[in-house]
Image (tube, rainbow, N blue to C red; front, side):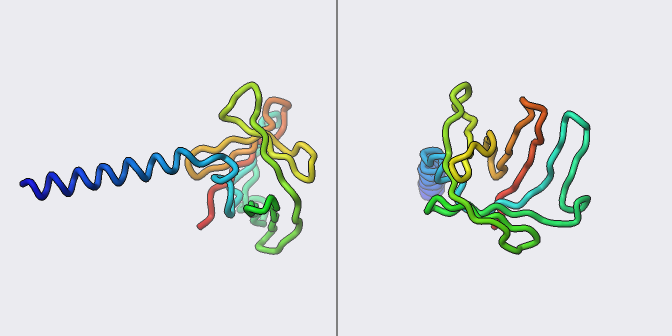
Length: 131
């Protein structure tokens, strides 16, 4: 009985420590990796696009050196320099700059990256972390 209690206590402690480490990561660290396009919604005209409808895939790759690669159908189409700024009116939202030009407001939820320009009748594009 004591060994089971010790095992569960150890597992709980380990899980707590690991979850704390994830929470301490900045958005600049969390965005690193490849993100696969899921869909884009154009709310003003009530249209949706996705890889099945458009006939192509899109992937964004954020590197730790501040570079972003954009792929279409797994072919590199653009490399740019990116930066991340905190959106002043909401600290959970961020702005991605690309080649020093504001690219898009975004936020992250679990393994989803959402670029949202809906406040100016623009598109909302969703990406999911690619393994």
